[in-house]
Length: 158
Image (cartoon, rainbow, N blue to C red; front, side):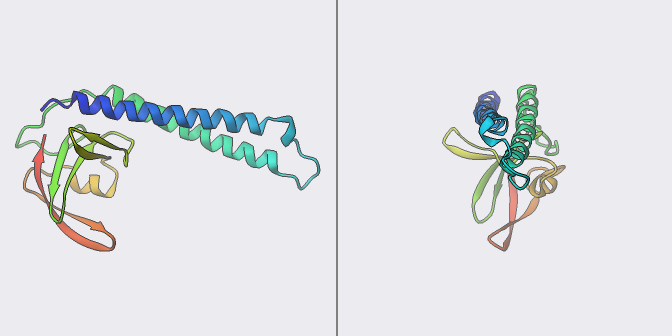
């Protein structure tokens, strides 16, 4: 299976997210350093609060940039039938529903629609990623949704 278009779609989504985070961070930085937010008395914390927010958004920008860089350097490859699930695998699990997951190095929770199918990125450190790691086709995993635990089966690993 050619996963290059899927990776390109994920990279585009991460680029869009990074652009949005950067724009918000720049706007917040401008607000934090604005003359209007200079403290008028000792209990005026508008500027301080804005600087905390700007710092948090700066960290979010770094995280998003790192996620993007790692996906840009990811080389798509196919997984052999006997090969365990790892980073770069596209995994189909079936049970109550059919779900597709792409095991990525970062950016867990990112969703894209590719070839008419919704695919969610999971990381090896996430609860689902830990369950999938090392498993192969036909393995069982337990997923919890809405407080209900269900057993799913890995039906495809590419």
